[in-house]
Length: 201
Image (cartoon, rainbow, N blue to C red):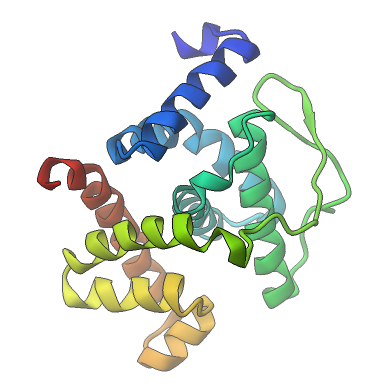
C-alpha cells in the first residue's frame, strides 16, 4: 500500500510520524525503520560493497536518526535526511578503512529512480541543541540499561564513547567478527526496548 503513495503523500505521512516521535511516542519510530530499512541498506551496500558492513552501517544510521530526530528539517523529505545520515556513516567508515568503494561523487538512486547526490557537508547536531539531544540520549540510556551487561557495554562504547569497531575490538580483546555480531544483536534489542519504553512512562 505504501508503495502506491505519491512522494508528497509519503513525505507528509513521515512528517506526521516524526511529530509523534518528538511528542514522546517512541514506538512510532519503528514504522520509519520498517519503511526505509531496505532502501538505506541498498544505498549503503552500493557504497561499501560488503553485506555485513552494510547491515551494521544501516543499523547505525537508524540509531543516529532516532537520536537526532529533532534536527530533521520538515522543509525536506525524511528519506533525503535519512539517506544523508547513512551516507555520512559510510564516509566515516571509508575514511577509517581506506577501502575500495563506489565513488561518492556519483549520484545514487532512491527506489523511484530519482537521483540523490551525496554531499559530505557535516549536518550533525550543534552544541546549542543540547537540551533536545540530552532528552533523546536519556531515552537511549534507559533503553540500554535494560539490556544484558555485555550489550550495554558495547552500546556505550559505540554510541556514547563513539569508538570505532576496531577500537571496541581492541578494548575488549575480541575478534572483529564477534564484536560485529554482538553489536548487531545489541542494536536489535535496543530498538525493541525503545519501542517498549512508552508502556512504562
